[in-house]
Length: 80
Image (tube, rainbow, N blue to C red; front, side, top):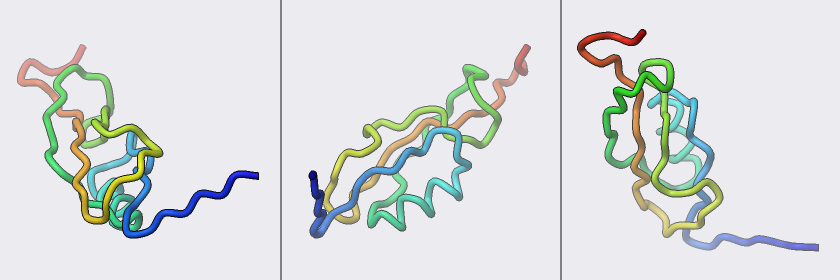
């Protein structure tokens, strides 16, 4: 049996596919914060959703740590 206890920190939730507000809520519930939001213009996801998170899901971080993400945006030329 494995038991995991986090004291004074939070475990990074999976954010990919979530909207920015939903990601912020998930991080807040984990005792963490939403950090920088980098524009992803690769057309990899629906506009406004998280396409990449720069801290791996399941990583335990100190309370209040910001997790940076990439957010899908439509490039000026549009997506094909």
